[in-house]
Image (cartoon, rainbow, N blue to C red):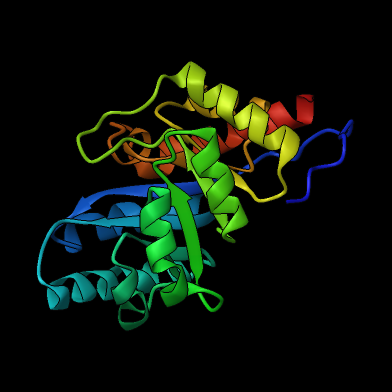
Length: 219
């Protein structure tokens, strides 16, 4: 795959990518999600759905899709590539290269297929070579475990130096978001640090967006 040219110019601030809590009742998230999307420029929202039958999952996604899409963000389902079209989503985020490879034919080229849960550099390279729209580093697994932040920074820096396909770095805090931006992330994913912030989702995401913009201006 194509390597990036050596870059000496200042990087733009990365765009934001929201990761929702696990959703069982859309009404409980809709106001927080709308507030966050109105407070900052968000490229995509990863909708994580609590386990249910297919019809329930589709209905949950359909309830939230207009909130996301009318603000210009892409709605991605966490898994469930077979439900993307029926749910009116823009694509799916797959955990692990095997899941991505299995889902690719269902999604490409009409819809977004992103890949996370990549435990090795080799797996990340395989995802890129298989035409993933992005790779994500650092997100928690289904048990809430995640790699060390230092390992994520190292992976982001390596990817940004070599590959053209965008990378997303998962940030647990606004401080981590700034460090991921400095390491070269094209997108910064935010989850509980937005939806669990006592100030509210709008204030939390606006604060992070401001910090990233100031970091870019300052070089």
